[in-house]
Length: 194
Length: 99
Image (cartoon, rainbow over all chains, first blue to last red; front, side, top):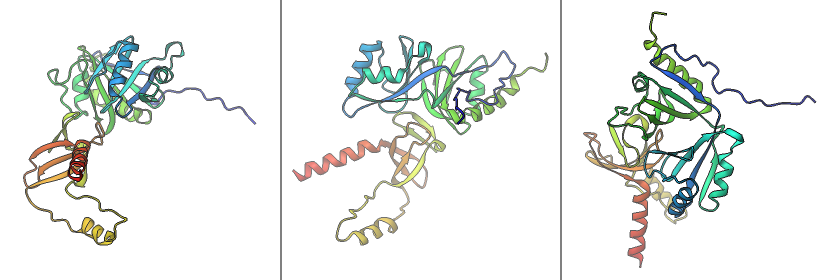
């Protein structure tokens, strides 16, 4: 019998970001991600464990904090998503499971979701075409998080910096639909001149 | 119509699913009058105009179940509570009245 070798492949079959300096899009596919939810009555113990291990204060409501190279993103009531680079075969699921034994459920999300980074002077107006929340800096700023949808694709959206830079996490199998919508939405900002 | 989710803030209707009347309670299927109770529960709804308590699910958001008090004639939302809090309050009220 032939050996079957599984090789990692991109979630995006058709990745063609528009050629414009006003919008930069990149797929972050080398991440390790794990979601964790507090066990009943263990919310405080979970906060203390994360604070002791990483020096991070878990956001109580929709927000994102970064500590020790890990981003902690609010992902629903008493749930968070931990994200970092997969460098040195780092495995956040194994890491968190060891640190949170008995106080939280930890589930690997590395191959379940992809993160798309969107930045540039037109990033906000492109996103606003498909995201039904207010992205004005008064309403949504660096550190803000929203669980919502973009052109019917469920996403967790957060703002990284004032560039503005945003990141959207979505289920892998929707990544192509999201990218298709994003690049269509950005098409008007491609300048006609070479 | 917009609903102010206690977790996510005010969101558009297309993020939510309407999940029924929040004023009725599913009967005990093992009770002796279960058949009559379920007929009443399933079919005998009053559909009143004005304020009404409804269950909504924040499907495209934080996945919380909500109890929304809404005027069905004007769509004005009077209050939004977490269904979890409503259920826990009802549970502790039953406990208090039993003791």
